[in-house]
Each structure stands twice: as structure tokens, then as C-alpha cells.
Image (cartoon, rainbow, N blue to C red; front, side, top):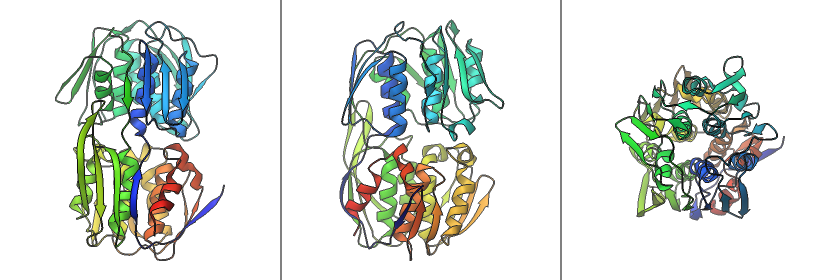
Amino acid sequence: MSEKFISPVRSLKGELHLPGDKSISHRAAILGLLAEGQTRVYHFLTADDCLNTVKACQQLGAKVEIKGEELNISGCGWVGLRPPKDVIDCGNSGTGVRLLAGVLAGQAFESVITGDEQVQRRPMRRIIDPLKAMGAEITSEPGGLCPLRIRGGNLSSLNYLSPVASAQVKSCLLLAGLYARGRTLVTEPSSSRDHTERLMRYFGIPIRTEGLTVSVEGGVLPQGREITVPADISSAAFFLVAAALLPGSDLRLFNVGMNRTRTGVLEVLRVMEADIAEDNPRTQAGEPVADLAVKYRKRIQGAQIKGAKLIPRLIDELPILAVAAAAAEGETLIAEADELRVKETDRISVLVQELKNIGVAIEERPDGMLIRGGKILGGKADSHGDHRLAMSLAVAGLVSEKGVTLNNPECVRTSYPEFWDHLAAVTL
């Protein structure tokens, strides 16, 4: 594995068109697979995770063409999916495994789905149990781990009370619910991201949302659509934090998704007194979008980052918020975030370890971490093959005193292949 040195910079200035939203790109491909007719997706994220989902759609019978950031997919409809000739490998994408498992549970053939070593350590019991309750036959490795062998079809609807606020669990069951008799309901302890519901409606599937309960009636066929995917706010977060930390920064990010279930990072940065403005708000394909302008005004402040209504809305952004806290004034507490332990890595333990390695005063807690703001000295750090950790440590290098030498920087391909080029384009 290679290393990359990220040197300290003065500021970030310029404009960026960020890559498409990863969550929406996954879902657009999967609904395109199930739809009747042609689905054309503009600004599709051509990162490894989403391309593995596209490959899975092809294995299941979809005809797919990709030209740059445009994805054209000819759907299979209800009875058109075919048994895959080989194992479906979703690579590093837990989203791909969990969402496609919901589709496979509705098929009257056997299939095997898995991912890479990191995904094979991620908990799948949270989808296995409710899918079995709907009538699917599923076997797994001990502990409910991948690979999953699924024989589906003949599903019954389910009224499921989820123990976790997880868009992946909810989406899996809604997709399975399309194939079930009756109405499938999923109730969460707090709201998770709602891209699946919005996109299902856009594809012509009636979805009901009542409080924390989402439901879908089985037997409704999605209709092919044209969709433009907004820029990913999770990708934007790295640049928002870097610009908020570096004096003289003035950066504009275009067409960023502003879904309320994903904007917790903006709320926290504003509490930390970062200057972030929203311009040109609009809606595209059922999703709110705006341009973001971030300027350095003063040193940001520590904050309390916790709560069931907030943490699910910024779970993927907690690593970069930890970097923001490391360079802020005062203490920051991240709590009630134990879901970080079952991501691509144990992001609590690994993040604390790597931030300590570059001189951050940080303590690990069972459900988060306590960070004492100050200076980031720099040094050597390891991405552990985790794309979000790699990009967070890159930002730490930009604002550090001595720079950061990062091991395995290539893992950013999972979600943001252009990250290093975009970073170079706006750093001074």
C-alpha cells in the first residue's frame, strides 16, 4: 500500500462540483433494475461502491450502459429478474448488501450475496431476522455475517419495530415489501435518512409516512424515470470543515443535497460558529438541493454532539467533525454514537487511535469520544482502508502544523474517486 503526504495549507478558495450522492445513486440503480422501462440517471456516482451495485443489477438481468456520470438502465420489472450465475459481490458496500438482500428476498430463486473483508464483519442479523419473518429463507455465517444465501419469494407483509434507526434496514424491508402480500410497515426509534421513500415516490410507488412509521403496499410496479442525483453532502463535509478551519478560506459548493435527514453536519458546524450560507434552494427528483458557501470568520468552538434526533442525521460525518473538534477552541463531546463501531471499521476506536497518533488530545468513550481542542501536530496515520477516515485525516493534515503522512490513501475510491484532485484544485 502506498503513502501520501498531506502538507499544511494556508486556505481553501474556489468552486467545486462534487460527485453524486452515494446513497441516492445506489437506490436509483436498484429501482431502475426493478422498474418497467428505461431509467436514466444523471450525475451518478461512479465510485467503487455504486459500480458494484450496478454490476449486481447486471447479474440480475438489467441492461446497463454508463457514459461518464450518466447511467442508463433497462429495468426487468417484477418477473424479469434472473438468477445470478455467480456470487453477488458488493465490495465495500454494506448499503449494497442490505438493500439488494431486500430485493433478493422477493425472488423465487436462490442467490448468494457478500462483500469484502470489512463488509463480512458488519452485522446482518438486523436484516436477516425481519426478512425471515416475511418468509424468506436465509443462511449466513455464524453471528449473522456475510455471505448470505437467500431463497425468497412468496413473502408476507410485516409490521416491524426496528431496534435501530437505520436507513439500510428500513430500505431493505421496503424493497422486500414491494414483493409481499399486503402492507409492510417499518417503525424506527428516530428518523433515519429517507432517500428510499423519496425515490420510491418519484418512481411512482405510493409510500406512506406517519410519524416514525413508513409503509408500502406490495405489488406496485416502479416506472422508469429520469433523475439527476444531487452532490453528496457527506463529500461536501470534508471541504466545509477544512474551509471553516483555515483562515482566509472562501469556498462555494454547487448542487449539494439538503435532505433534512442528512443535514445534521450543517447544524453542528453552525453551533460551532462556522459561517455557512445556503443559496439557490430548489428541488430535483424529490430531493432538496442548494449551493453552499463557506467562509472563515473566526476560530470555531467546541460543541456537544449527541442525541437520538441528531446522531442518525450525521453518523457518516462524525469522523470529519472529530477533526473539526480537534482544531476548535474548547472541548467537544461526541456521544450516543455507538453505531460507529459497526461501520467499515470500528470508527470510534480507530479514529481515536489515529487522531492520537497525530497529536490530538482525545479520549475514547463506549459510545463516542471526548476531544480537547487545540492544535493538530501531524505525523503518520493509517486509513485502515476506510474511505471516510482517509478523507478526514487528509483534512487533519491540511490544518496541522507538520502535515500528515497517510497510509493507503487510495481507499477514497469507495465513495469519492476525485477527492485528491478536488482537494488540490482549491488549496492554497
